[in-house]
Image (cartoon, rainbow, N blue to C red; front, side):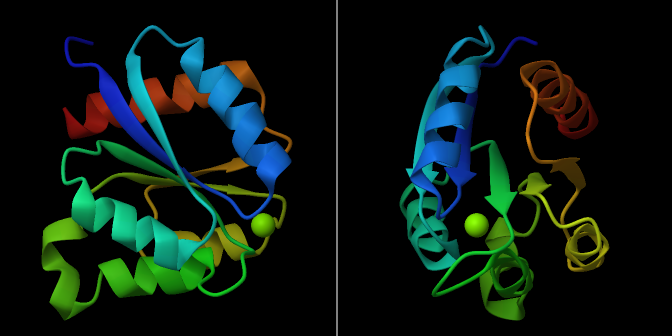
Length: 129
Ligand SMILES: [Mg+2]
C-alpha cells in the first residue's frame, strides 16, 4: 500500500467515533482520520475535502442517516462523489443489504474488531487501487 489513506468516519455516537479513531490511528497505512456526526455533516466534509479516500458509515443517525447519505451521493447532482469507497458499520443485520443496494461497497457488523476493520480497509484499498 503505497498511498496513505485519509478516512472519513461517520457516526452519531461519540463513543463509536472515538473507538474507530483509536483503531485507525494504530494502522500505519492511515494518514488522517476525519469525523462527522451524521450524513449531512459527512457531505460537507466530502465537499470540502475531495482528497478523502474512504468513508466508514453508520446507518442509524439523526438529520441524515446512512441510507439517505448513500442515496444523496449517488444522485445526479453529486456524481463526483459516487466512486468513493464506502464501508457501512452497522449493528442492524438487515439494513446492511439496503445499504449495499444503495451503493455501499462493503459492510462490517458492530461491535467492530480492529482486525476486521484493517482487513476490510486493505481489501477496499486493493479493489479501488
Ligand atoms: Mg447510530
